[in-house]
Image (cartoon, rainbow, N blue to C red; front, side, top):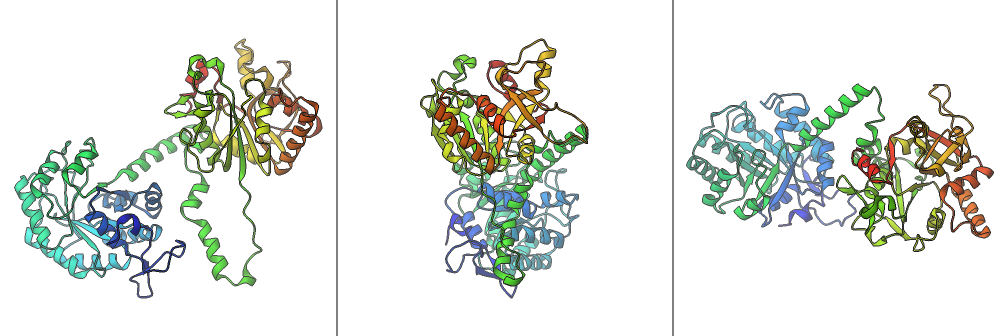
Length: 587
């Protein structure tokens, strides 16, 4: 029998008769050998020697997220599906509504799904129809529980009545006799312990269900510890696979389940619970702010939705199936946006914290600052990323900042050269649309999104308020070299949304400054050519080695328009211990 890891590479696509045909998914790109069914994959998980895990899903989208996370199987939770419909977990959702939900899930993923079938939605006849329909839709198995229809959630009330053992065994036999796929799995769930019965009753019921043909037994408990579950396993042995749902005894180490010989753990409702928390927080924030700026970079992007629902597959299918004459002229995908992170400096203002690492690798809420910066760039569509290292360069590696395709470049002369010398190490990457950023900066994703939308060859992000706030406190700018004077100041006028143009950067008198550059700029493909030409000129006149980025921008603005996109906060750079404290509150 194929193991679960192999089996989930295939999809049980329904054939013309509506049944599992064993055809591989057309986008899988695998061989044409017959594919094992998803039921076989679930059976392999249940019967395998390793502890298996099923993750709850309640929709096509959540099923795809479970697959993306790396799980080998899905628990189609009745509670979660009911809740997603705004219904109680009391069979208020009809079995046909549940069937429709799980069909979307089966279509959305290649993983085997074990459906939470409650009591089977009635007697043996209801179970027969349910199993036949599930098999036809490529669902790998069903779990039914020995309670009465309509069911009540296990964690509500005490001493819930249980089904007669013989009657429930009849449901099990009806299910097994009705399955179309020989590997379809029937998991029998006993609620004896949940209902307050002694262990002997739980064992008696489990044995009866096993003899009636159940492929696995789910033993359920609502105790805060796993003592009931482990006690059951000590007496049950290995008569057949045992499945558990540690929702209440979640603090039990997973190693204890392995040692007890448990087959499968179900994480039963955590995605729907997580979604409720996230939706509440997001709705409350938008309602309070009457704006989106504080939430946009904390939630999935629209691009993520397109990727999850596989929009690209529709385009590929159109190329395959639509007549050539009806196809629009092909539009090549835009080249990847290049990102260059200048991260060669130590950050001496942080003292001993940067004794063995550059400041970009300082821990900020459990992760290096650089890792969080790279995440923001990727979320904003900047995927072709390079980091220029210098001080303690070994601290920046594929292990410490894991990222697909990340290129690491080195400025070994970082101690005696400036930022332009670091940029020169990445000169060959200045092709096409490019984002350049300092490695010690954090900013909200909407700032990057706005910068990408400015119609200019060279555009810099400038905070219009920080320098004013510092002046109001009687403090000088921490970075006078980054002060900017543009041809017009920041304006809140609805009618004044055109970008300003850089006039001066660096030694700007505070009274004339219109803001502070935050260390982030974007180049169009033509803008990248302009920067390469200026770097050549600086190399030729000998200024490149010692120049900083404001010097480069000053030279560019003397020859070409450099757009200024004003922002009003929502960013920070980390130069001091105080900055680091602020960064750890930046969420």
